[in-house]
Image (cartoon, rainbow, N blue to C red; front, side, top):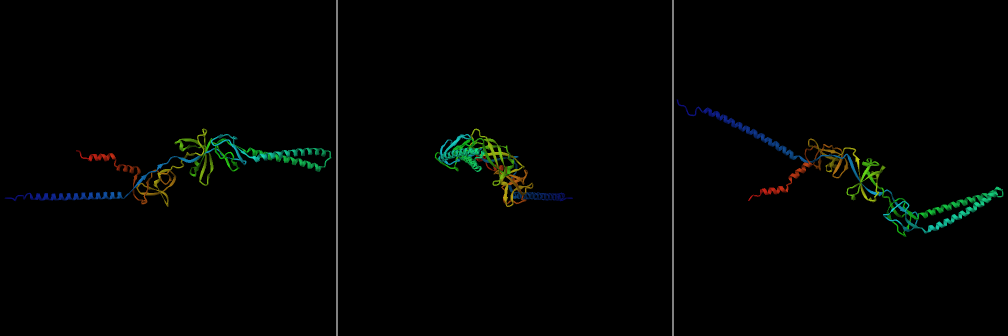
Length: 409
């Protein structure tokens, strides 16, 4: 019996073909699943990148702690411990001046002399009236003495005796009046000599020989230069932090940063209702006389902080009709508007007393398009600076790249 060639291999071929077809189908199915999974992952990544790209990037800054002790610096002008303008008590012509600006004088030292011719005549007349009154008193007392002897012997009428007694009293009163007028004129004579009321330095001289002087004209200005006095006006915020005896530092611009220690001498018991500040007087020793009255100075002192304030950049503040607030980023990267209470203003930085904490993240220079609850991408200010620095090409890198790109000969 003869069999057809390949008849025995036919079932095997069919089985192999089936297995091969199933394998190809499984491969195609698996490949399709992998492709679908890859497409889904790519779609998710694209959606995630799109969502990330739609987020606004904001510059994030963090508050920093303020100083426990506040340093206050206030402007002041040096003044003499006593600044006395000197006027003339009598009118006349200046006959001589003996001191000028810059001269150091003692109390009672002669500064100038005034010539008053009519005063000499008034003094002569007053002396003559005093002598006349004294002669009348002597005559009245002698007459009264004789009438007193007659009264005791009943040889004089009582009425006439009383008249003589009254005449003696009147003569005595006339003498006292003449002497008082003479003393007044002698005192006016003493006003011709202009003397220093206190020790100090002459800072102004407004007279010369021959000038006509009246009572309203300033002749000299006298200033005590040791010690000197400074007056500062402390704002109401710090008015309770200054005490008598508190140490301060006085700095002069021309001293190149050097300070002179001093102490508060007097503190006003009330605030000035005009500028809402407290007057403080400071005494500054000046034995060497190097410090000049009228010079500008800055007085610095420290006051204890009453609260733990935070310092933030000034560009985080937003001021509108609702008041002053900041834009913060919460833990879920969402925008949150918070009202704040401000303290001192340092220019680029401000002090925040209430509204934020040290752990908060604030937005610097916030855009007007930001809305509450919006999800943003905070970028730290330092990190942004590093990114900008990395993006900026360096000269060395450029030259290096050029050398590598140049083909070798």
